[in-house]
Image (cartoon, rainbow, N blue to C red):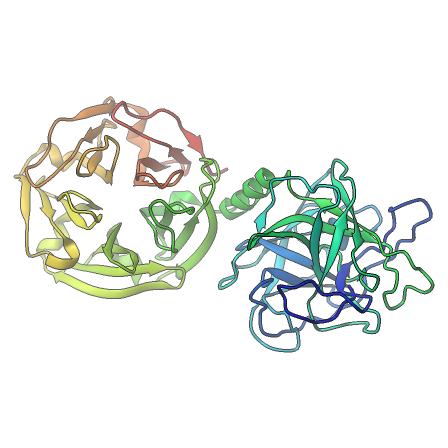
Amino acid sequence: MTATRTSARRTRTGVPGLLSALAVTAGALTAGAVTAAPAHAVAGGGPADATYAYTAKLDIGPGRRACTGTLVDQQWLLTAASCFADDPATGKVTAGAPRWKTTATIGRADLSAGGGSVVEVVELVPRTDRDLVLARLAAPVTGTAPVRLATAAPRAGEQLTALGYGRTADEWVPDRLRAGAFVTGEAAATTVPLEPTAAGTALCKGDNGGPALRETDGSTELVAVTSRSWAGGCLGSGTETRKGAVSTRVDDIADWVRTTTFRGRMKGVDWKTADLLASGYFTGGSAGGKRHMDLLVRWTNGSVSLFQGSETSNPETPFSARYELAKADSVWKHARAISGGEFTSGGDGLFVRWSDGEVTQYGRVDQKGFHQEKMLAKTEAWKQAKLATVGRFNGGTSRDDLMVVWDNGTVSLYPDLDTNGLKKENQIVKTSKTWTYAEQIGAAEFTGGRTSDLMVRWKDGETTIYPAVDEKGFHGETKIREPKSPWIDAKVLTVGAFTTNKAPNDVLVRWTDGKLTLHPKVDAAGLHSEVRIND
């Protein structure tokens, strides 16, 4: 694309060649339009543009082709399928690993400098109805927020900002991200035409797959992805004077993006090996905020993964990114019970009971790991703590109390864990044979009481809700699954706010056969629906 380099927030106009992203030049704009293979490009680096940091430079080949893409999920880019097609004019791409090794540079406005992320593309998931493909990265990108997808179609005469790393009027392989203003024509079912608002602006080779953005009232959203351009005025375009382009609409494919990215995150995961689960607002979400609770998973090999909560209320796609917090054979293979809770003002943390009787509180957990570690105890007695969950049992405003079921059937409540540690123990059930049969417990807000409810899955499959548990004990019970029910195979469960941030009342279950199901909005009447969220 051609344009002058000014503030990233302002429209750049001037020299032809503002955008550098079109892998296919204008081929099907009108009869007689020419097509060409993508230009060669080199990956580079530079300080991330704070405004458009989600824009990616794609080096395909390497050096065979250059395109631009957009980060729409921490581990996925949206770009043009024609960038990867054997014949760019058709845009036909086979799902799976890209034919040519592809590297994405994300978060660098200046490719000659450092910063940002350089990640390999490992999987392509194309649309069959338009020039569009989702490209999965080998690892999630940290420190760069994905762009939001538009949900309203582009209007004729609307101004959009298009970006790309393609050639300009006088640079064959530029090292700068450029942006320019374009006005839309009448949108078709899957495409929208673009015309530059300034004479010196055009989309050039290398700009293919780049974003066309709607910027209004301080908000930015992705409306379309560059597909074809006449490239008039771009270096190498000869006598061509036409500067129009066609972009692929994305305003109607949000559900496809969410479903694809989520399924990709679940793909190949052996959930039979997920033996400890905990929920919490670990990655910056909060009650009442847009993003829902995250899921922490300890696997049988000692590795730990963090699945970031989604902004969608769709129970089929509750998580938006995956981060690895610990590798196999780490110290985490010795964890025996975990539960998330709010212990400090810095975000949700984690309670851990270890195999050697040590009990640890992490004041905060996030994408980078575990922080503010505090040992609460290390005794032989704590080796007998069979089950543990953190909840709001003392009537306070934070979910920071601890409930423990011991091997001998005793049930203890430790109020205000962060302040008191384990100094105050309130035995709400003395030694009881009944409670030795408790297999899973989880604190929740099923009934809307002053304090948290407790869900218990018993050894025989019976599942019970105890409403508004406090220091005085249990106040009634509701049986939501009978003995010998299928819930006898509910191997691991956790309760969280996975589809709404009003209350943690969604139950996530990992079954004996590795099936993972979400039961949204459980209440006093019990379970209402079940959604399988892994293949």
